[in-house]
Amino acid sequence: MTITERQQKILNILVQEYIRKAEPISSDFLEKKYKMGISPATIRNELQKLNELGYLEQPYFSSGRIPTNKAYRFFVDHFLKLNHIKENSLISDKIANFLKRADYDRYKTIEFITKVLSLSVSGLTITYLYKKDILLKEGWKKVFQNPEFKENDYLEGFFKAIENFEKKIGDFCELCEENKEEINVFIGKERPFLGPNSFSLIISGTTFFKKEDILLGILGPKRMNYNKNINIIHSLIKRLEKL
Image (cartoon, rainbow, N blue to C red; front, side, top):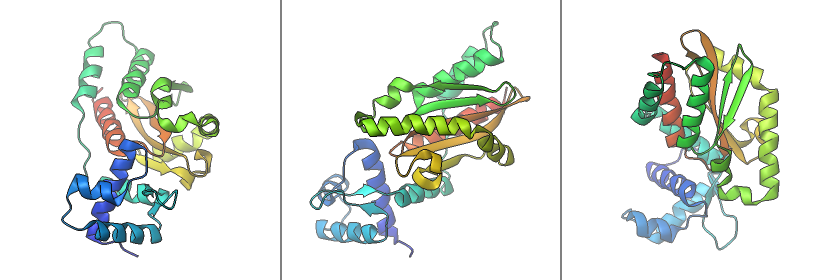
């Protein structure tokens, strides 16, 4: 069933607020902050309809709503279709300044890129050089600051997801080779290795120095900042195309 334009607006706002707050979002909060021009009762009715359609869930009877996998998928697809992808000049400038150095080589450059990416995104940064079979991971401290990691089971699940990703790295190389520079987003159980419900992966392939294929990825909580992360991956790809 297609959701209405008003439901889309409410869902879009709720997903972004949940990403920001990491706690259930109530109808009262939405009405007070966004002044939608409709009553709290109408907002509650729309939230209930979105609940029934599988876009939202209510952890406790008296709590607000949180997005489901279906909501994140709608949000990401809608975001990409609207072509909100923008160039991130900060990423480009940092890489350009690094390349002015006389002592850089390919490995040092990809190591630098991985670190720059990890400082800019909400998630664990992953880069993989196909030919050299080198996998780099940066951003552990930042990703562990997410409130989800206070739960031991969640932490164990994350390490398991990383382990499984490494085992299936060849599959992702093939996928990205077929759709080079296309940004792929996998949410929760869309990929079994991510676990039943917990994590998301943004990944894309590109060419490095016009010779070497690499993967660029961000692995983190399903409640990640998709807009920002997708924009940054896109900017990085465009910058690497110029090397």
